[in-house]
Length: 599
Image (tube, rainbow, N blue to C red; front, side, top):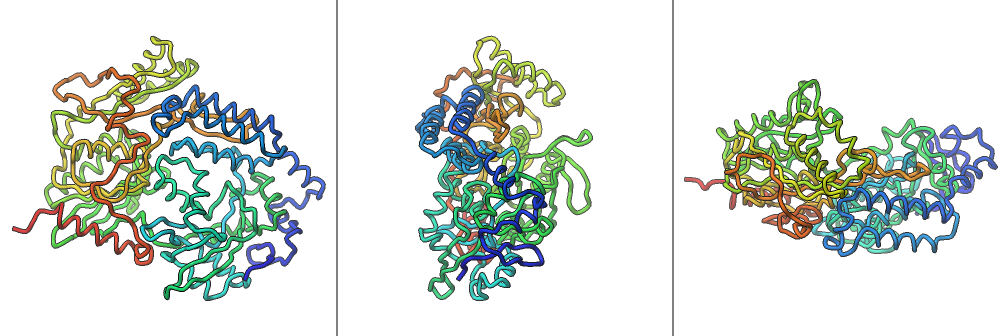
């Protein structure tokens, strides 16, 4: 029902032709430019074939010097990084020249996506305009593609403009099955968009693509609208058409975006309305599965939620609930891994908070639910320390094994890490550095660090760990260690499959920027895994003699998603009724496999 539409300005609507993009430019304060100047700006943001090739060659060089998985991808994903970039160079030669920077950005994202590493995140130096619609995200379920989150304020605005009917608006709710997108099966559309996302497993790729599908900073829509076919509650189908709109995250950012998108006839949202119009509403899958008593929520210093603790009563038994959403925490005023309790803004250590919580759980509850479904990783050292609180006291203990790729230009930078309090980390950095100097190579052998902390086994009762394809990096290391020890039961879907390592140092060769300062990316130069070592040895630092054949072993975490003991997937019903079906399956597992039987 949506045909040609006008530019949307908060509070007022200017009915104009799609060819007249002045309202979009005026809304950003660009009305001082003449039409000739605007066209010149667009022309200046064009890249010749030579410039695009130089960017790809620069990326290839940075990858070869710093990316620890450069020579290993053939074993892990079937092809090396070099041939991937070579194929992108060949494909670029077929693209008419010149090409706009954000069209090239889209193709560059596809190139990086082929590398299958969740730690590779290509960005524009200056953030482009964000293109979205009245829908916020999709979700992948065992029932297919469903609508997850919507933007209710935009839906109301679209209805007021006559772009959506009241019936169509009523259909667009969480859990509704999406059958087709732009006249192709919904799954096909999500897979196509997923080419721009670098993930190690197909499931992780589809999940992330579905979440980002209606929020685009790459692959700008070539049309002004998007068509959907959805399933109604009666089993019939409904076709509808929604407009794409765009907004700039910061006034004045990336002038090319408003100009080019305005020329396409895509409406613009005024910056002053961003906090209201793009807001999301839908089922919160990142919330605890059960209602919790004695619930406490904690934030890191960036005010991101990282930890939730509490208790649930299941089948008449008390169960502790520990949800760790991230290990991304920093030191504050002498507090290692500092977090803030949201109820009273009190600062404390995440490690101490978890240890105290688990000590109470050991004496007052029957089991622990460890919720890692949405854990985005972070500090692997912190993940290891928290893992020690629940791991088994075995003679063969997991240790972290690290390898590093760096150029000699980076060696002097590593001297600045002397302020790190963790002596094992300091020793490890110096040993890795000395090995590079000694062998005159940029790639070190594996170094194993065994943590002999006395605080092992704070909680020794049964554990049910919830995992999903969002569990990545340090989260996967914790899951890997639990699986090595057969500690508890893993339920959910396979973890992300990290990729290959993460960026350690964050400067020089680990941060790539092209010569024109258009794009940037942190390149992983540090890989880690869990291995078993003999706990009878008192020396905490061990060198493990291993060549690259070690990457094929079962204990490797990179590019190998950890599989659950029991598969539990979300259904369309979960997004309609707040994880009701998922919760029922977890309750059944607890009753049959985890909680002790009644006497």
